[in-house]
Image 1 (cartoon, rainbow, N blue to C red):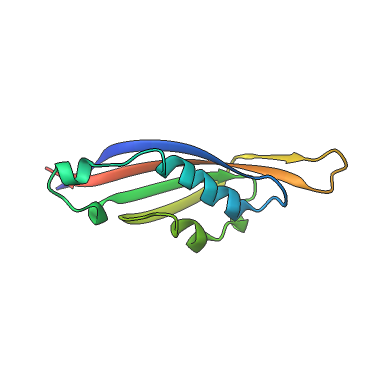
Image 2: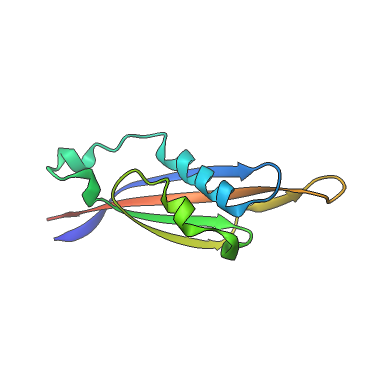
Length: 113
């Protein structure tokens, strides 16, 4: 069997105060996942836990993301997380704090003939 792309979802998340990359990344992932309910696995006679979930997140400082906290958002399937440079940082007026935006793309694959 070959893993084929079944869905692509995108999302955005923010940490309005504090610039926490992990919070923003987890919120971006939730935004991408919580707007849909994938029934494709069951429609193909497969279990949702068999889904391969490829998560790609862009944040300004990728090395600061705590992967296990972001992966905990995934409800089923086998997730794989890649964090890259992206997103956006917006400092406040006096540069004492920053708003951080993260972007997520989630590709769901299933092994099908």
